[in-house]
Image (tube, rainbow, N blue to C red; front, side):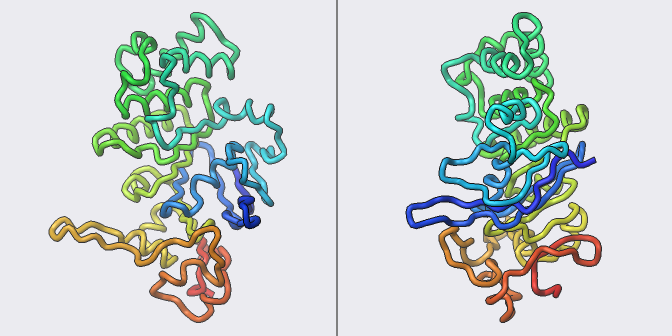
Length: 317
């Protein structure tokens, strides 16, 4: 059952020199209990696409077309009061930086209780017990005592656990995890992802995982959307994408490796385009080793290839 569908989303920014489109016809869906990974280089549109779901966009951002369906209700038709009942309670966000996502002036307990009161209308012992249980779900030891602690008393990994606990405290059905392991060391990254896997499985949650780490994707995703220059250029199950990548950009991402014997890093030559760049043809063509003349003139559309994956590439015309 599809719990969330993004259909033909178009979005841009009102800048001083006019409107610049940043997201071009992005579509993806999420089923109950499923993990969708959205991957790509920085600036490709991963975060802004998913923040559109919660309508947490900069003032200059403007959605110009598309639908965002949560349980068949178009969220783009919701006002702010209606969205407040969705954010946190139905669709929760684990933001990118755990270091700055908690208010340093309030205890962990106060911040958890505020969310529970807002979304569940509970106070007192009942709310307190729910908050403690949420901390215990993410394996924070001595949870009752930790309710009295301030964020500065927690490590980065512990702060990230608190943020996950906040997402779980109101029994959200969908969690958007935006680079959930950024700024954490490798051991803590593994712990955080293990916690996410456990709570997702136990409570049958649906997860959107935004990341550039293909190792995390390989371990956690059911299906993958590869984004470049505000477009989805490949959309497939994890097995099909890793075993038989179609788009040259996807293949290039999978080939970005570090040779531990030489410390050489194999990279993708060039840089992704800015939203202010005037693009003709496929936006990846200046960096693509398979570029053809048509690629410089016509932007390919995302289409199904051999009934197994979707890609936007003239190689398959």
